[in-house]
Length: 230
Image (cartoon, rainbow, N blue to C red):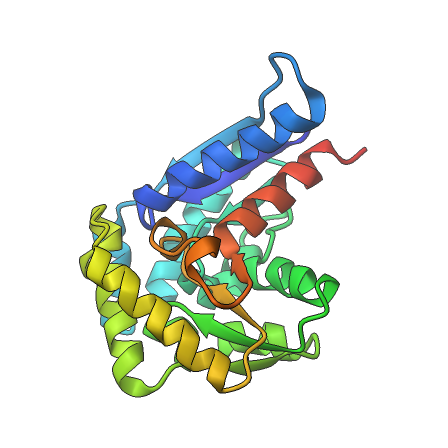
């Protein structure tokens, strides 16, 4: 079994889900007392968020790159950045290590293509929804991407940073996310990507009028599959 390296803590709330999902996948595949070989490096999220908000992306890339190097030195065979937004510095981090990094948007695009989706909604932080570093990975694979309007983007960003990253699950926010997803369906979306690893804590498939593609589940499941590859 390969060893999975996780760069977590962005936020630690969703990193818990990664650990749980990966181990559940291994247990399902192998049975018995089997579990995953995982090394976790959990960063200080406040430091990362300050880099984001001040536009110091290179600095945040150095922080994550240092984490990746430490995971590699500790024996990780593959590394995951356990957040969507910080894939903005994916290439910078990948250049700092020899082991492969598993890109969350590429893994998600593969699942959408398997499901026959052509046009997808994307929810996430403002960075993820508005900038091209994430959407381009979807477009390159033939997907059309729709995002919420400005007001809805601001609301989603607020809920992520001021509620979900602090472990707060607000029922009113839940209803508003469902309304946003319904509006995106009216704009032609055939599915919705939960493109922030915390959104899956709030939005569940049974609440959504669109098929939900939870990037946390997809990313973690793919890592487990890689760990079991010969």
